[in-house]
Amino acid sequence: MDPFSIIQKKYAEAVSGIEEEWFNTIDTRWYDHVSALPADQRTTYLIVILHTQTVNGGFHQYFINGYGQFANETIAALETIGASAKAQLLGRALRLVNAERLPDAVFRALLLKKKFEPLLGDDLDTPLNELDKEYYADGPLDHIWRLLNAYLKTR
Image 1: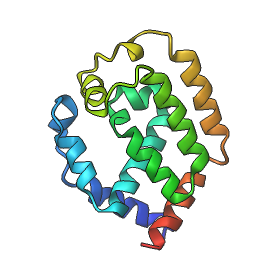
Image 2 (image 1 turned 90 degrees about the vertical axis):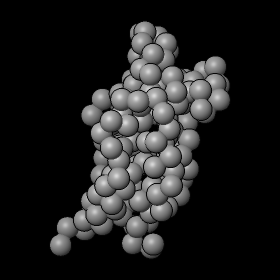
Image 3 (image 1 turned 120 degrees about the vertical axis):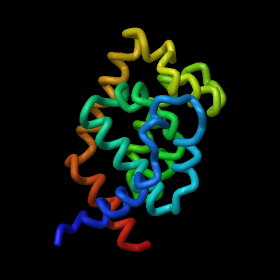
Image 4 (image 1 turned 180 degrees about the vertical axis):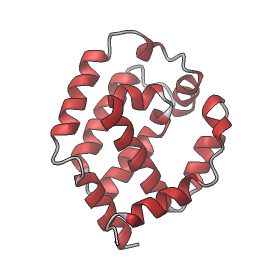
């Protein structure tokens, strides 16, 4: 049996109610759905999304694709599983992207409209790329899966 099958199972449970159309709207259904998930499913969803988006295209991709709306919740999830260094990196990325410290609801809406000015220009490319490098350097890439797997085994 695959030692990480529990992650796959919890992730499948988490996404089972998500509608494709939610990714193209600016309402709160996607956010509300994820927020209402049981802790183990929510933690799994948030961490899987962060890791796959960041490994695939970096923090810029994570934010531009709308997943950055969950940044604060993901920081908490990372802390919960013991991935403090990655939580700090995401916190730094969030402070770069949302330098104006917009309220969460306003920040989420701007990300979902795909018109969030700081992400549309080149100003954040270099600092976010530097954070990407730190993310990749923070242990082997499967380390996050090991931490998440260990967390899920205790639930």
